[in-house]
Image (cartoon, rainbow, N blue to C red; front, side):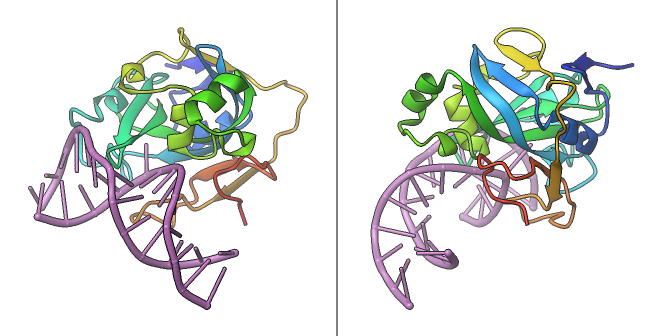
Length: 190
DNA sequence: TGTATGATCGCCT
DNA sequence: GGCGATCATACAG
């Protein structure tokens, strides 16, 4: 079994998918850019929303791979994830930052700021710039409004890894991935 | 350059 | 009732 989108098999462990997503272009209704930062969340580690089983919030992580999982964080921000691994397994990849490429003016308007570097540097900011909300939960990633484009095959992509950000459990897992040296990261790697 | 704080939803204890 | 895969603002140094 496999679910291939933009050259990536989403029926694979989340750390594998998270690494492969660096450099992929993500568009929502034609607005978006190049993915420069991701984090993996698996079902067997306590930092993950799917740890401890299915709830009304996280049900889409227990469905088919290659779909979206959108949840509300701290009551105000939306965060966008890609579901991976086999059906019913429960795992996901959090999108943490994009390099803005398409629809810059719309993103600036939605974010209420001009600085290109801060338009999508962080999961909440990214979702706001792309106008992602509950309506985008549990949607297939190979169907509109989502578009995923594989990076140019010739281009070398240098991926940095490190500990995940903003969590208190399983902090030691090096499951944050980023495009080395990008100025659009939510935080630099070191 | 760093640390504190408020906003305030959905789930879990 | 408390806390979190966050962010913007307000201060202190």
